[in-house]
Image 1 (spheres, rainbow, N blue to C red):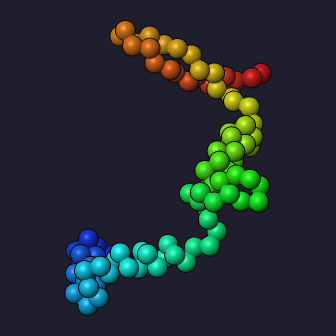
Image 2 (spheres, one colour):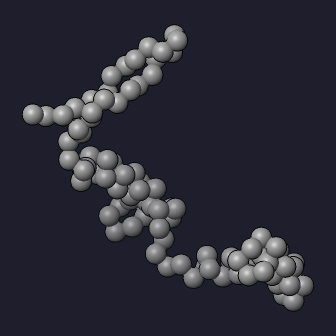
Image 3 (cartoon, rainbow, N blue to C red):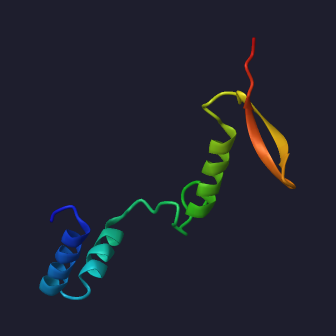
Length: 95
């Protein structure tokens, strides 16, 4: 039964029986308390003067501006289909 939904349900029941009803809450709390990096969810101000959320915004902005894929090879055109406007991608072949 290992690797199946039935096996998972049986293991969960065994863990709760052996270790108590708050077993999963306790192991989750242990993992959360062990983290030392702060991460993007941190409200602490780092050496750069930014909170984790502000740092995430700046990282996302930089990632959005810097594309590793190169220029687009497809041109998007608007096509009206039964009164609804839809975007259709047409491959542009350069000769």
